[in-house]
Amino acid sequence: MREGSLEAPTRHPLDWQNPWFWDEAALEKEMERVFDICHGCRRCFNLCDSFPRLFDMIDSGPTGEIDGVPKERYAEVEQACTLCDMCFMTKCPYVPPHPWNVDFPHLMLRHRAVQTRKKGIGFVEAQLADTDRAGRLGTFAAGLINWATDERNQPMRQALETYAGIHHGARLPRQAGETFEAMARREPLEVNKTAPAYGKRKAVIYATCFVNFHNTAIGKATLSVLARNGVETEVVHPACCGMPKLELGDLETVARAARTVSDALLPWVDKGYDVVALTPSCALMLKFEWPLICPRDPAIERLSQATFDLSEYVVDIAKTEGLAEGLNPVEGGISLHLACHARAQNMGPKGAEMLRLIPGTRVAIIERCSGHGGIWGARTENFDVAVKVGKPAAQAALKNNTSHVASECPLAAEHLMQVMEIEAGETGPKPFRADHPIEIFARAYMPKEEPPNEQQDESPQD
Image (cartoon, rainbow, N blue to C red; front, side, top):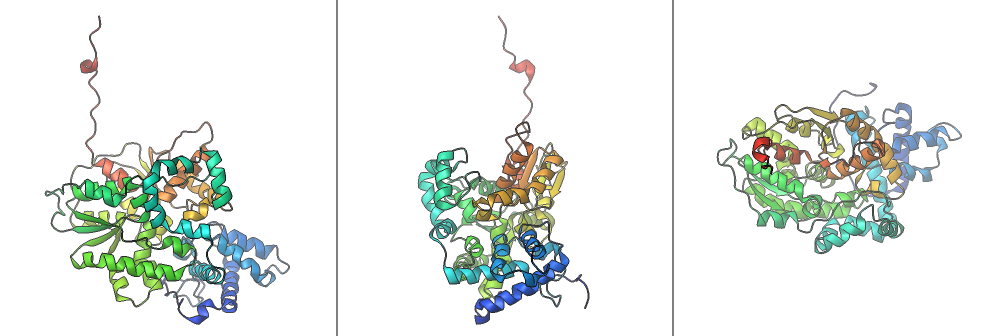
């Protein structure tokens, strides 16, 4: 048997409808097998907190091997996993097609699913994961919600920590007062008919929960860039992709979401539209996770093949038809954090490729986890770990000393900004601004402001 593998990794479908998937004894046996392999390898020690926890448990046990770790402690390893997929994508030499068949993230997901079926989902966790309902209700009280959830509002944040388990210092998403769907209908943009892609591209924008209900600026920048490049667009948000439910191990709800969203998007595909997802986590769900959870479903497979990540789509336009003229250099350079769920799409660093299309602009890449892990990093028991995991990325951004810091994942961007502020300390530069690459790209298309003419601005003196 070869040590490691140089072959391209393959992902097996999740066989969650098979009774063996839910067998706890079989699950513990498989976890013991994989943990023993990880113990002998240890290449993933610096990715997240799952592996240090595992190795510390083994090293401090009576035998120094996996057989010295009580199986009831296996859950501690799973609880630190954010399902980022980086161990599978970038580190592990034993992923399929290697005969050892190690898929650590999906093994952790299986453990989470078994525990969810056994114990159920808590009330607070269920409410936080229902992003569509929370987002739609939140639009009616955006100002009040933003006041209450601001980390500087310590009385309210202490109450939120007590009753919802959200750390009082974790930076939370802002609530938009209008959905991106409504904004797009209210402010249609004229498509540039002189752009090379005009008449050749149509895109249906899957708004995603985060952009639709929280950061509508990402959506607005997307429409601006695509209109400038001659792409006709429509904006829809039929339902959440199910990523928050996946993080809870609720596979049945994820499968239902996959069918609901695919039923809504495929008619657009039939009309010749490309599907563009605005956040990497949602693109990953449509392109990769759904086909593994609902294997052999032709509708979901067809949607997977028609879906683009946002940065991937702009790069594809540039390579296929060419971009519209008018991009101006971004002064001071950009530090781009490569989001884990963008990397997990196995498409290359498309965010960096897109930003490098801007002439005369330095782009520095950060290939470390930001540490946020969705709602995981905001939980009281995880926030300090999330900050620790994100420190190397924050330090890299500070060392790059660029004028802009960006991440394709808006949650990762906000967490990275917060860790940068912690690392910079009281005397460091602040506040830091969290951008999405598409926002920087849209601003690069704006005409540069001419410096004021001092002679014209001078007022006559008495």
